[in-house]
Length: 57
Image 1 (spheres, rainbow, N blue to C red):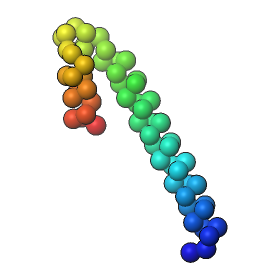
Image 2 (cartoon, one colour; image 1 turned 180 degrees about the vertical axis):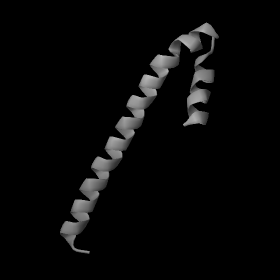
Image 3 (cartoon, helix red, strand yellow; image 1 turned 180 degrees about the horizontal axis):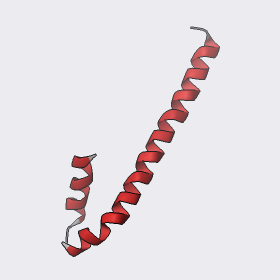
Image 4 (tube, rainbow, N blue to C red; image 1 turned 60 degrees about the vertical axis):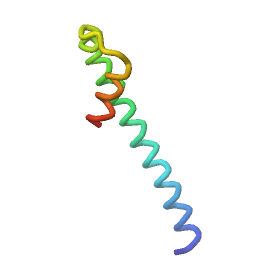
């Protein structure tokens, strides 16, 4: 592989993984805002909410 190929691959993968992380973050925030009323209604702690997202993602 030439040096230019490696540079292009690194730049592409950096942008790709950044985009994936941002999309997952936005999806989690939207999901949390939709389920926030249920969490409050059932008096769930932060630990329960965190476990819910950790297990189901």
